[in-house]
Image (tube, rainbow, N blue to C red; front, side, top):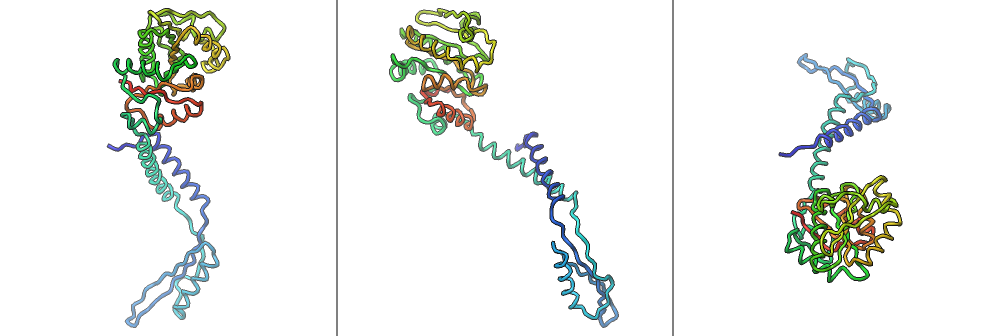
Length: 326
Protein backbone atom coordinates (compact mmCIF):
# COMPACT_ATOMS: atom_id res chain seq x y z
CA UNK A 1 0.00 0.00 0.00
CA UNK A 2 1.36 3.43 -0.95
CA UNK A 3 1.68 5.73 2.06
CA UNK A 4 2.97 9.26 2.32
CA UNK A 5 5.17 9.76 5.42
CA UNK A 6 3.57 12.23 7.84
CA UNK A 7 6.64 14.48 7.85
CA UNK A 8 6.65 14.71 4.05
CA UNK A 9 2.89 15.29 3.99
CA UNK A 10 3.01 18.10 6.56
CA UNK A 11 5.90 19.77 4.76
CA UNK A 12 4.22 19.54 1.35
CA UNK A 13 0.82 20.80 2.49
CA UNK A 14 2.38 23.57 4.59
CA UNK A 15 4.53 24.81 1.72
CA UNK A 16 1.61 24.71 -0.72
CA UNK A 17 -0.71 26.55 1.68
CA UNK A 18 1.90 29.24 2.24
CA UNK A 19 2.29 29.63 -1.50
CA UNK A 20 -1.49 29.77 -1.98
CA UNK A 21 -1.83 32.48 0.67
CA UNK A 22 1.00 34.48 -0.91
CA UNK A 23 -0.66 34.23 -4.32
CA UNK A 24 -4.00 35.26 -2.80
CA UNK A 25 -2.41 38.27 -1.10
CA UNK A 26 -0.13 39.51 -3.85
CA UNK A 27 -1.84 38.40 -7.07
CA UNK A 28 -2.82 41.32 -9.38
CA UNK A 29 -6.41 42.46 -9.04
CA UNK A 30 -8.84 42.04 -11.91
CA UNK A 31 -11.53 44.62 -12.73
CA UNK A 32 -14.99 43.69 -13.94
CA UNK A 33 -17.11 46.09 -16.03
CA UNK A 34 -20.76 45.06 -16.29
CA UNK A 35 -24.18 46.24 -17.46
CA UNK A 36 -27.61 44.70 -18.03
CA UNK A 37 -29.94 45.37 -20.97
CA UNK A 38 -33.60 44.49 -21.47
CA UNK A 39 -34.32 42.46 -24.58
CA UNK A 40 -37.88 42.11 -25.86
CA UNK A 41 -39.08 39.95 -28.76
CA UNK A 42 -42.10 40.44 -31.01
CA UNK A 43 -44.36 38.24 -28.88
CA UNK A 44 -44.15 40.52 -25.90
CA UNK A 45 -41.71 38.36 -24.03
CA UNK A 46 -38.56 39.89 -22.60
CA UNK A 47 -35.39 38.85 -20.87
CA UNK A 48 -32.46 40.55 -19.15
CA UNK A 49 -29.01 40.07 -20.61
CA UNK A 50 -26.02 40.80 -18.40
CA UNK A 51 -22.80 41.83 -20.11
CA UNK A 52 -19.49 41.42 -18.26
CA UNK A 53 -15.86 41.99 -19.20
CA UNK A 54 -12.87 41.41 -16.88
CA UNK A 55 -9.35 42.76 -17.32
CA UNK A 56 -6.31 43.69 -15.24
CA UNK A 57 -6.59 47.28 -16.55
CA UNK A 58 -9.89 48.96 -15.52
CA UNK A 59 -9.90 51.12 -18.66
CA UNK A 60 -9.57 47.99 -20.78
CA UNK A 61 -12.56 46.37 -19.05
CA UNK A 62 -14.69 49.49 -19.58
CA UNK A 63 -13.66 49.76 -23.24
CA UNK A 64 -14.69 46.17 -23.92
CA UNK A 65 -18.04 46.74 -22.24
CA UNK A 66 -18.72 49.82 -24.38
CA UNK A 67 -18.02 47.83 -27.54
CA UNK A 68 -20.49 45.16 -26.44
CA UNK A 69 -23.18 47.74 -25.61
CA UNK A 70 -22.98 49.14 -29.15
CA UNK A 71 -24.50 45.92 -30.39
CA UNK A 72 -27.54 46.66 -28.22
CA UNK A 73 -27.91 50.37 -29.02
CA UNK A 74 -31.46 51.56 -28.40
CA UNK A 75 -32.16 48.84 -25.85
CA UNK A 76 -33.20 49.79 -22.36
CA UNK A 77 -30.49 49.54 -19.70
CA UNK A 78 -31.66 47.72 -16.60
CA UNK A 79 -28.33 48.12 -14.81
CA UNK A 80 -26.07 50.99 -15.91
CA UNK A 81 -22.39 50.31 -16.62
CA UNK A 82 -20.42 49.72 -13.42
CA UNK A 83 -16.81 48.90 -12.63
CA UNK A 84 -15.80 46.85 -9.59
CA UNK A 85 -12.54 45.34 -8.44
CA UNK A 86 -12.71 41.58 -8.50
CA UNK A 87 -11.76 39.57 -5.40
CA UNK A 88 -10.18 36.12 -5.04
CA UNK A 89 -11.69 33.56 -2.70
CA UNK A 90 -9.25 32.81 0.13
CA UNK A 91 -11.00 29.54 0.88
CA UNK A 92 -10.77 28.39 -2.73
CA UNK A 93 -7.10 29.37 -2.97
CA UNK A 94 -6.25 27.49 0.22
CA UNK A 95 -8.22 24.44 -0.91
CA UNK A 96 -6.28 24.40 -4.18
CA UNK A 97 -3.07 24.82 -2.17
CA UNK A 98 -3.94 21.84 0.04
CA UNK A 99 -4.54 19.67 -3.01
CA UNK A 100 -1.26 20.80 -4.53
CA UNK A 101 0.44 20.00 -1.21
CA UNK A 102 -0.92 16.47 -1.25
CA UNK A 103 0.39 16.09 -4.79
CA UNK A 104 3.76 17.49 -3.76
CA UNK A 105 3.99 15.09 -0.82
CA UNK A 106 3.08 12.12 -3.01
CA UNK A 107 5.62 13.17 -5.64
CA UNK A 108 8.36 13.57 -3.04
CA UNK A 109 7.58 10.12 -1.63
CA UNK A 110 7.77 8.51 -5.07
CA UNK A 111 11.06 10.31 -5.79
CA UNK A 112 12.57 9.21 -2.49
CA UNK A 113 11.43 5.61 -2.95
CA UNK A 114 13.05 5.47 -6.38
CA UNK A 115 16.20 7.16 -5.06
CA UNK A 116 16.52 4.67 -2.21
CA UNK A 117 17.47 1.69 -4.28
CA UNK A 118 18.51 -1.23 -2.07
CA UNK A 119 21.85 -2.87 -2.82
CA UNK A 120 21.62 -6.65 -2.92
CA UNK A 121 24.78 -7.90 -4.58
CA UNK A 122 28.04 -7.26 -6.39
CA UNK A 123 26.33 -6.02 -9.55
CA UNK A 124 24.63 -3.29 -7.55
CA UNK A 125 27.82 -2.27 -5.72
CA UNK A 126 30.19 -1.97 -8.65
CA UNK A 127 28.59 1.14 -10.24
CA UNK A 128 28.37 2.83 -6.82
CA UNK A 129 31.80 2.12 -5.33
CA UNK A 130 33.82 1.50 -8.46
CA UNK A 131 36.09 -1.47 -9.05
CA UNK A 132 37.73 -2.45 -5.77
CA UNK A 133 41.22 -3.90 -5.75
CA UNK A 134 40.00 -7.35 -4.71
CA UNK A 135 36.31 -7.42 -5.62
CA UNK A 136 33.32 -8.28 -3.43
CA UNK A 137 32.55 -11.36 -1.38
CA UNK A 138 30.27 -12.53 1.47
CA UNK A 139 31.24 -12.47 5.13
CA UNK A 140 31.99 -16.19 5.45
CA UNK A 141 35.00 -18.02 6.97
CA UNK A 142 36.25 -19.46 3.69
CA UNK A 143 35.88 -16.11 1.95
CA UNK A 144 37.79 -14.35 4.75
CA UNK A 145 40.65 -16.82 4.56
CA UNK A 146 40.98 -16.21 0.84
CA UNK A 147 40.68 -12.46 1.40
CA UNK A 148 43.45 -12.47 4.01
CA UNK A 149 45.85 -14.22 1.62
CA UNK A 150 44.95 -11.84 -1.22
CA UNK A 151 45.41 -8.78 0.99
CA UNK A 152 48.78 -10.05 2.13
CA UNK A 153 49.81 -10.45 -1.50
CA UNK A 154 48.22 -7.39 -3.14
CA UNK A 155 47.77 -4.74 -0.43
CA UNK A 156 50.15 -5.08 2.48
CA UNK A 157 53.86 -4.49 2.03
CA UNK A 158 56.77 -3.19 4.13
CA UNK A 159 55.75 0.31 3.01
CA UNK A 160 51.98 -0.19 3.49
CA UNK A 161 50.77 -1.89 6.67
CA UNK A 162 47.59 -0.01 7.52
CA UNK A 163 44.02 -1.01 6.55
CA UNK A 164 40.89 0.58 8.07
CA UNK A 165 37.58 -1.27 8.04
CA UNK A 166 34.69 1.04 7.09
CA UNK A 167 30.91 0.72 6.92
CA UNK A 168 28.01 3.12 6.69
CA UNK A 169 25.92 2.15 9.70
CA UNK A 170 26.19 0.58 13.11
CA UNK A 171 25.40 -3.10 13.20
CA UNK A 172 26.78 -3.71 9.71
CA UNK A 173 29.29 -6.32 10.91
CA UNK A 174 32.31 -4.02 10.63
CA UNK A 175 33.81 -4.88 14.04
CA UNK A 176 33.23 -8.61 13.52
CA UNK A 177 35.04 -8.46 10.19
CA UNK A 178 37.98 -6.52 11.65
CA UNK A 179 38.29 -9.02 14.49
CA UNK A 180 38.07 -12.15 12.33
CA UNK A 181 40.39 -10.76 9.68
CA UNK A 182 43.00 -9.93 12.31
CA UNK A 183 42.79 -13.50 13.60
CA UNK A 184 43.27 -14.83 10.06
CA UNK A 185 46.45 -12.79 9.61
CA UNK A 186 47.75 -13.91 13.00
CA UNK A 187 47.09 -17.54 12.05
CA UNK A 188 49.13 -16.96 8.87
CA UNK A 189 52.11 -15.99 11.03
CA UNK A 190 51.78 -12.25 10.42
CA UNK A 191 52.39 -10.03 13.46
CA UNK A 192 49.06 -8.24 13.61
CA UNK A 193 47.79 -5.24 15.57
CA UNK A 194 44.05 -4.71 15.84
CA UNK A 195 43.01 -1.18 16.90
CA UNK A 196 39.59 -0.11 18.13
CA UNK A 197 39.32 3.46 16.81
CA UNK A 198 35.56 3.60 17.28
CA UNK A 199 35.44 6.09 20.14
CA UNK A 200 31.66 6.47 19.71
CA UNK A 201 30.59 2.82 20.13
CA UNK A 202 33.69 0.78 21.10
CA UNK A 203 33.21 -2.98 21.15
CA UNK A 204 36.49 -4.86 20.67
CA UNK A 205 37.29 -4.86 24.40
CA UNK A 206 34.15 -6.93 25.03
CA UNK A 207 34.93 -9.33 22.20
CA UNK A 208 38.33 -10.08 23.74
CA UNK A 209 37.20 -9.82 27.39
CA UNK A 210 39.43 -6.80 28.04
CA UNK A 211 38.97 -3.69 30.13
CA UNK A 212 38.39 -0.57 28.06
CA UNK A 213 41.26 1.48 29.47
CA UNK A 214 44.81 2.24 28.47
CA UNK A 215 43.65 2.41 24.85
CA UNK A 216 44.05 4.61 21.79
CA UNK A 217 42.09 7.51 23.29
CA UNK A 218 44.35 7.48 26.35
CA UNK A 219 47.41 7.52 24.12
CA UNK A 220 46.12 10.49 22.15
CA UNK A 221 45.30 12.26 25.42
CA UNK A 222 48.89 11.82 26.66
CA UNK A 223 47.88 8.98 28.96
CA UNK A 224 49.18 5.48 29.51
CA UNK A 225 48.62 2.86 26.83
CA UNK A 226 48.88 -0.91 26.89
CA UNK A 227 48.69 -3.44 24.05
CA UNK A 228 46.94 -6.67 25.03
CA UNK A 229 48.28 -9.99 23.73
CA UNK A 230 45.25 -11.92 22.48
CA UNK A 231 46.91 -14.98 21.05
CA UNK A 232 50.00 -15.79 19.06
CA UNK A 233 50.95 -12.95 16.69
CA UNK A 234 47.88 -10.87 17.68
CA UNK A 235 47.86 -7.71 19.80
CA UNK A 236 44.78 -5.58 20.50
CA UNK A 237 44.59 -1.89 21.38
CA UNK A 238 41.19 -1.02 22.86
CA UNK A 239 39.47 2.32 22.34
CA UNK A 240 40.13 3.49 25.90
CA UNK A 241 38.67 6.35 27.90
CA UNK A 242 37.35 9.18 25.73
CA UNK A 243 37.29 12.52 27.57
CA UNK A 244 37.42 14.84 24.54
CA UNK A 245 35.52 15.14 21.29
CA UNK A 246 36.33 11.94 19.31
CA UNK A 247 37.15 13.77 16.09
CA UNK A 248 39.36 16.29 17.90
CA UNK A 249 41.28 13.47 19.57
CA UNK A 250 41.86 11.64 16.29
CA UNK A 251 43.00 14.86 14.61
CA UNK A 252 45.99 15.22 16.91
CA UNK A 253 49.45 14.69 15.36
CA UNK A 254 50.18 11.98 17.90
CA UNK A 255 47.95 9.57 15.95
CA UNK A 256 50.22 9.67 12.90
CA UNK A 257 53.33 9.25 15.05
CA UNK A 258 51.80 6.25 16.81
CA UNK A 259 50.76 4.53 13.57
CA UNK A 260 54.23 5.07 12.14
CA UNK A 261 55.75 3.52 15.27
CA UNK A 262 53.29 0.61 15.18
CA UNK A 263 54.27 -0.13 11.59
CA UNK A 264 57.78 -1.13 12.68
CA UNK A 265 57.11 -4.19 14.88
CA UNK A 266 53.86 -5.24 13.14
CA UNK A 267 53.30 -6.44 9.61
CA UNK A 268 49.54 -5.84 9.65
CA UNK A 269 47.57 -3.04 11.35
CA UNK A 270 43.78 -3.42 11.15
CA UNK A 271 41.64 -0.50 12.36
CA UNK A 272 37.99 -0.74 13.35
CA UNK A 273 36.56 2.72 12.54
CA UNK A 274 33.26 4.34 13.61
CA UNK A 275 30.26 4.01 11.33
CA UNK A 276 30.29 6.63 8.59
CA UNK A 277 26.82 7.80 9.61
CA UNK A 278 28.18 8.74 13.04
CA UNK A 279 30.77 11.20 11.72
CA UNK A 280 33.82 11.65 9.46
CA UNK A 281 36.27 9.92 11.83
CA UNK A 282 36.84 7.07 9.38
CA UNK A 283 38.12 9.50 6.75
CA UNK A 284 41.27 10.20 8.79
CA UNK A 285 42.30 6.54 8.68
CA UNK A 286 41.24 6.06 5.06
CA UNK A 287 43.40 9.03 4.05
CA UNK A 288 46.41 7.74 6.01
CA UNK A 289 46.08 4.25 4.53
CA UNK A 290 45.15 5.33 1.00
CA UNK A 291 42.31 2.82 1.00
CA UNK A 292 39.63 1.09 3.05
CA UNK A 293 38.01 -2.30 3.38
CA UNK A 294 34.27 -1.74 2.98
CA UNK A 295 31.55 -3.68 4.76
CA UNK A 296 28.13 -3.42 3.11
CA UNK A 297 24.86 -4.60 4.59
CA UNK A 298 22.60 -6.26 2.00
CA UNK A 299 19.72 -3.91 1.33
CA UNK A 300 21.80 -0.80 2.02
CA UNK A 301 20.61 2.40 0.38
CA UNK A 302 22.41 3.01 -2.90
CA UNK A 303 22.44 6.77 -2.33
CA UNK A 304 24.33 6.34 0.96
CA UNK A 305 26.91 4.13 -0.75
CA UNK A 306 27.38 6.73 -3.47
CA UNK A 307 27.99 9.35 -0.78
CA UNK A 308 30.53 7.07 0.91
CA UNK A 309 32.41 6.72 -2.35
CA UNK A 310 32.54 10.50 -2.81
CA UNK A 311 33.92 10.92 0.70
CA UNK A 312 36.61 8.27 0.13
CA UNK A 313 37.52 9.85 -3.20
CA UNK A 314 37.81 13.21 -1.46
CA UNK A 315 40.42 11.81 0.93
CA UNK A 316 42.26 9.91 -1.87
CA UNK A 317 41.31 6.46 -0.56
CA UNK A 318 40.36 3.60 -2.84
CA UNK A 319 38.04 0.68 -2.01
CA UNK A 320 40.33 -2.28 -1.35
CA UNK A 321 37.55 -4.88 -1.16
CA UNK A 322 33.84 -5.07 -0.42
CA UNK A 323 32.44 -7.54 2.10
CA UNK A 324 28.71 -8.29 2.33
CA UNK A 325 27.75 -8.88 5.95
CA UNK A 326 25.15 -11.49 6.82
